[in-house]
Image 1 (cartoon, helix red, strand yellow):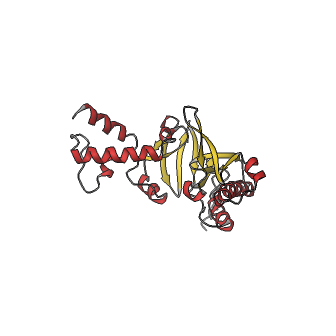
Image 2 (cartoon, one colour):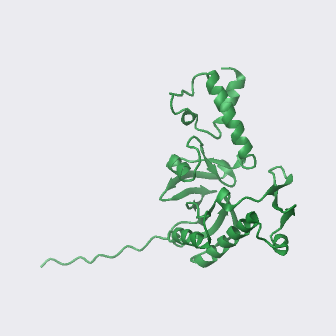
Image 3 (tube, helix red, strand yellow):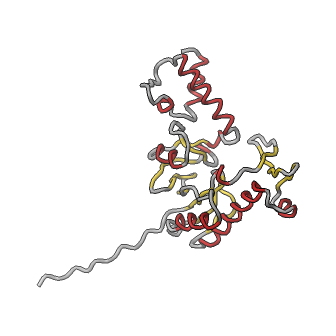
Length: 244
């Protein structure tokens, strides 16, 4: 295999399970890439890097339940995993189980729930958050937006604070997208009004700042993040009856 095609394969393997990129053929990673395979990998990788240019360093492989997670989040099943802060350097033992993405971050247990309902109104959002928080089991919790934990990580059972924080973020960007923010709210939220369109300031991994048009939360997704181990329910004691 040419050095160029080997380099292409090595780069793509950081983000894709290549055999899943070719579901109708028996892809053998040990063999040379055909012209068709090289062309498809190159095109898919190029598009992927354009769409996720800010998050490539956060790609983290998922072990057990990978395809189920990707399907539930509308991602292609050939992705090697999902985006977590710090990427594979700090996140290990990643798996999808019981509706949660479970992983260890620097040895400490973490979990992320299924995405919250950001396609409807406040009531739909609140109901989806309440359903997730039923699994809290004494863990700290926070809100994620676009796969990143934002806001406070709230301990114990303060579910109302989590819902309030999530609703604030949901409305902030939902109203910004719909053009419903006042001038004072735009300033308060550190957003930018450019000819009637609302933008936010972003920063590249190299520190370069730029502006990006605000997208609706349904486009980038929100979820609930859990920190720590679940509290185990005490086992019921069984009383053994003495035989007469």
